[in-house]
Image (cartoon, rainbow, N blue to C red; front, side, top):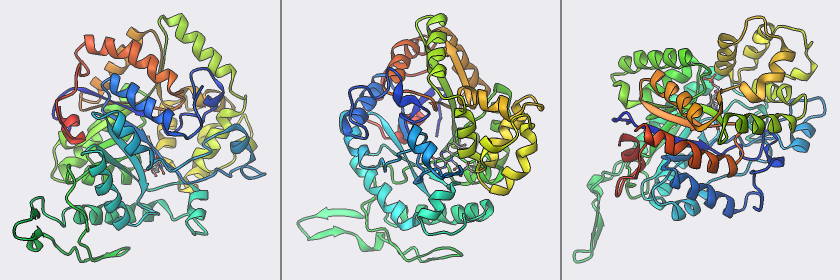
Length: 442
Ligand SMILES: Cc1cc2nc3c(=O)[nH]c(=O)nc-3n(C[C@H](O)[C@H](O)[C@H](O)COP(=O)(O)O)c2cc1C
């Protein structure tokens, strides 16, 4: 994976209307919510910008962390609604025949047989352009939706994930690439000796196999992993082709890459076997003043307690009820006990002023929670280049969070991509005929 130093580009449109974006210009205007036209246009624009992938995160939940349950997220459209994006993939794949697609499916709640079969089938439909984002799922309402009274502890979710990923890959390998004969003359569809039982008997799953699918164009769809704790990094180093990472500074990016490289070596893999998409939030304008004006407009349209709401949803406790003057670091033990997104909370503690209060973090959260840049095309390109270099030019950038689509994607494609192309960082054209794996290697 990522055999060249190309800066690969992806865009996360999981939250294209949430984060209070649905109300601002450039967001969803003229489209039916969750209808196909929006997604098809996003795919067309991303392909015009030579992107590698459009990405869909997922959480099958309605956040309910507040006294009255879910009324805040529902009223404000914060991470709600959340449809299943699978049906959009074939539509997008038809209008953007070069683009790859990342789709999230939980290792905690979906059976590995279902995941293996779904992704093999989607890989056929997209002619080899699928990636699976394997997540362990850290949301309480999602756990309850799938019948669990209490969300499994993080260590158990990761233990399941390790076995889950093994089973899925065994299933993908259970039909050899040359098993299909389609020999009409002799009446042989496929060669049974090239199709194998999996006979997996493990702690969490028993799966007989084989997978009743024709080997897909990629054979093994691209695997993405997004956890940031030690368990998350280890899982990525063992199984993933790409990691999706939220680090807030260049120093933190380099540190993450160094840790990954150490773990990859432990698992007998090379640094370039695992690329990283660094998450960056961009706000670009024709000039710096233009970008600042757009950012001001966005922040002015967001309710004052938006950051506290967002913190609550990410970290499982109601931040709106904490003493605003309390140090953020003093909430760490309560958050760790929730067994949710501990890896990303550690990143905030590591990269913020140690004395930052809950109130201050709440004010900054939406705009600065991830690595971000606001500025002219040149300033945005400088920032992305810095992140790419800090990560060893091994992967690329995923545009993420507070990203109003399709407007901000169009701005990025028209203003920033030409600048990145001028610098030779991103591709100027797609290879002739290629799978997503091939694209990420080129
Ligand atoms: C950048 C990023 C994107 C993520 N996307 C998803 C997602 O779409 N769905 C999901 O359930 N979890 C998602 N996660 C959560 C992780 O898979 C994992 O469950 C969570 O980060 C807790 O594990 P950790 O402490 O190892 O980070 C994401 C995490 C990060 C850091």
